[in-house]
Length: 339
Image (cartoon, rainbow, N blue to C red):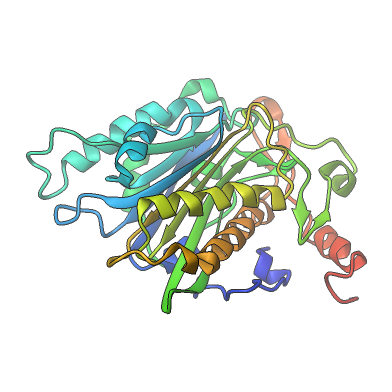
């Protein structure tokens, strides 16, 4: 169940065709999933087709809501306000192997034969509740698979790729995505979000709290590592400073879904643009900032609502959110009409 299937309205701005980050032209998403034995982990790749020999970087911004985590490549991103590689998400102790594999992959791109420096951007959350995180199971073959299988159009969500073993808000977490269509300074633009959820708190949908212990009638699933990675893409021609502002709204949006913002939660948002042209005036950014918050809120909810009950490492169990319970709570609160 996705948010638009509950159904809940999109807010002030309409959803894109696929309601996914891939609604931004040129963005592809791919996954490599590992679900065997004690492993529930993987890789998710966000690939901008605009990157290549003719365009080596894209403007980008970053918000570190809480820096208890590993987002590789942040110092150069901060310094130069740009990314120069696809963005990969994975398991916390596998981030370094994934970064190495990403560099090896890019050195093989046409036109990169003389490249001597690359800044791989790799984010992570800790899927150690459902997966043997110390095994560091993600390797070059999984990175290659995620990149090779990246596609435009609909994006697989829930227990897939980097979301295979995550938990969030007391339930099974995962990968979620959403998009909004917005007017920025008289130009029609798209903003899309993709989230890897693995954080604590009480699930909140449309302002209605749904604590896991109440919804499930049993203890909530534990969240190990307690982190969240959010990636935003837009075709609005915004610069890196403006993208910092967009990324900040993504971390704010975590509060809408009930995030606890715990001490050990690595909460990061990275925003980049594939647009071209002069950046708009800051005074025209309100629609983009609002649309980014709405897209992130929905992507985070989709990451949980599309996930399925998963049993993993040491026979631990993370349960899916019961769709009927969500609709019932929303009806009781008057958000949805009576059945």
